[in-house]
Length: 160
Image: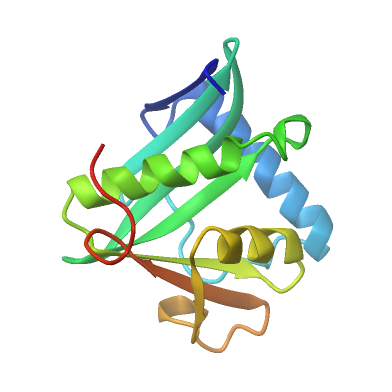
């Protein structure tokens, strides 16, 4: 993992845009169409943090944070290319997002994943997230499964 670089980039960064497009295509194929995400899609106007992970210069993963309120944010666009799955990239991006959230004063992170993504659900549960009732735009979405994790004191994440 010493060759993995995770850095904050602009939302419209070409490597990040390519990763998000790959994620979208994968989810469209898994869910059979484009109607699998309730609410407004993340954009440069509402994403506060966007991280891109590279290995040997090639983009291998990404993740974003969108502020929900003064004390919490939502994880958006977590994605790792298939060839890099199982190598620790996802956990590294998630930890980097958590550290950034703490730096920004957000004590809670929430996220939504889908019913047809058991791999994602196992990952978040393994990483310390617990299932919560659907929140915000996900209330009423039968395809949504939501999670949350407290950060900082008692939550296991500090600023590094």
